[in-house]
Image (cartoon, rainbow, N blue to C red; front, side, top):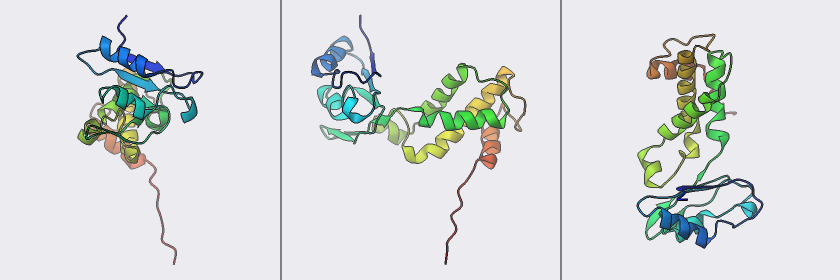
Length: 189
């Protein structure tokens, strides 16, 4: 058995992804970067901290967690762990489905949404080893997800309403952006 991905999600044994486990992941993946996702919440229950994942792997691990961890510097290279949860998927998925009146939400739409999140990573995200975009880009990411989901609904024939051109990503995004809620802050004098 040579796993390349290690996911913890039960929170029963905090710290169970210890140095020996990380070392084993490195040994069975000598030419690649193992993925370690510690999804348990809260931090006291997590399988491994970002600091330990990056330190024990000498920065080779691709790390994500269910809770927020601070950035870690390993040998002068900054690694910013991502909080891997549904905040990146559900707003855009729901918005895209509702805007096209999706008659159903098949499992495949979650894959489309996840791919849209991944495709939203920019050069800065990749340089810092983020597995999800910065949270300050959530509206942009949600729009990308909504457009991808709306277009997929059109392809699958489950959209009961059509936005202008669901085969053109830029037009779908433009139509959805026009319908996206935007906060307005008014100055009070």
